[in-house]
Image 1: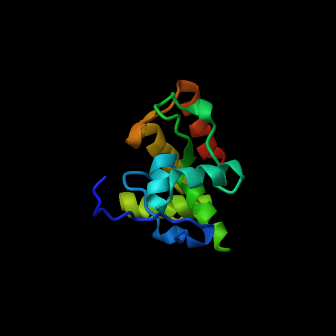
Image 2 (image 1 turned 90 degrees about the vertical axis):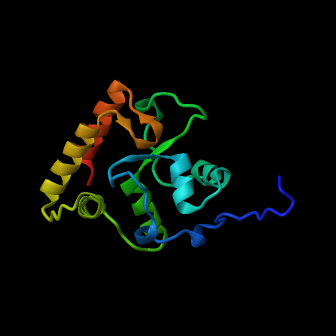
Length: 156
């Protein structure tokens, strides 16, 4: 290591997490899965600290591991909207699934949709079109992809 290198300390407390409105996951939609590494990077968190929070039940809801093909480092996956809702809840705010998806459709695809049923329909359509291989090396198993699409249909 370079003796003159500066070490930047990541976020170390739940209170220091950014508001959901300030967090972005480039290349991912509001309904997309995000790996632990990408989540930690977006939140400027140490992965070990995030793992500790997960083990203590403090973190966002994890997607079932059997939905994904094994990957080096055994990453865990979360859905972007659930991460954002978790961040909002940490601050006493609310961010529901439909709102997160609606904002993603507007920001990422330029589609202004207000009807909740249409928002859900479009999210599932785009998720299905993306297929089981997503950005960041996420690959679903066939059963996992089917269950993921079903989870989008049942999200509230």
